[in-house]
Length: 89
Image 1 (tube, helix red, strand yellow):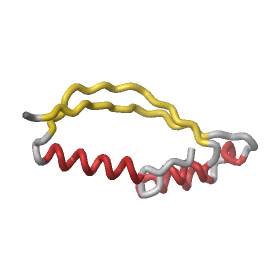
Image 2 (tube, one colour):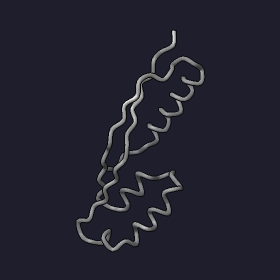
Image 3 (cartoon, rainbow, N blue to C red):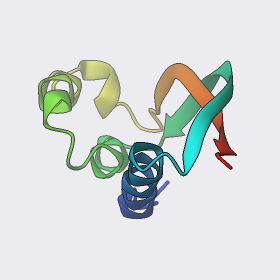
């Protein structure tokens, strides 16, 4: 998992502009659980770049004995919220 979130953040900003200008409005929403697996603390750190609140969690994980075991993986679970946008005519 070495993907960049820069494009996602740019898309979020573009959507916010379209909503603010009332070109689109929010439509239906769906929510489901997601699970992501990371092979190392470095992979997790890369994924969480530019997210300062997570630094404390990363520091705790770095010192956890289970992380140092060969083949250890980190699993993150959380909700995904998907919302449609409807063009305003």
